[in-house]
Image 1 (tube, rainbow, N blue to C red):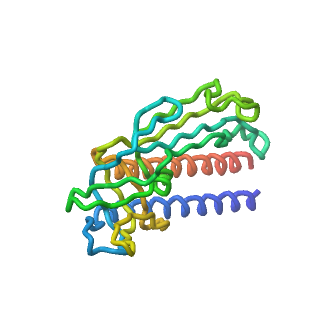
Image 2 (image 1 turned 180 degrees about the vertical axis):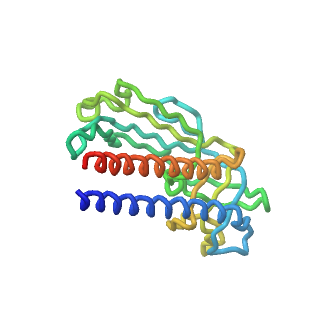
Image 3 (image 1 turned 90 degrees about the vertical axis):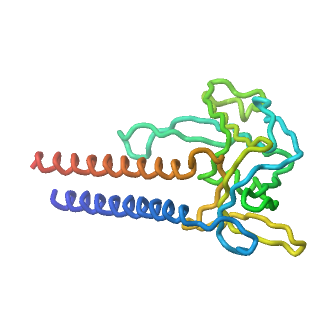
Length: 241
């Protein structure tokens, strides 16, 4: 019995350390984002923040809602539940992307607020980044969307439709690595480093920082639930002695 308690305590410590490290990393990232240098063309190969306005001559319509936009990313996910591997632990929701479409041209131009220079952004690289915040429409339905009507796609009972887009002249902020090509064009690329998160978001009330705050709050809730669950297990085992 004491061996079981020792194992549970070990799991508690491991889980606590993991969540603590993740929370500390998110706090460091938030502090780091507040200190990131603003764009200027002398910061080539550096991690920078660019605030500006989207410029695009392209007009697209998202395939489901027909929303006019300069760029869109549309996904349909099939949802279903399966039993957990451990008996008696309930069900877990699974998901699978059964449809994904990007607008034909994913290159956008961003006019910098600082210098009116043009920075090029490939939304195929930025649009799916976890921290990116675009205009978004997210809904669930028991009916398969019209664009997913073949037998393999229409066999599920629940679907999530996710549409994300940017419109002409949207004001945005982008974090990434500033690159200059041989022909003198400026590009912003993802860093692919956790400590230097790369994303694009609407420039509304520091939305990107609020999203990090939400993650921190979520981590704290997970930590509390994890600790309470382990403590209940320990108390139950002690009372059964």
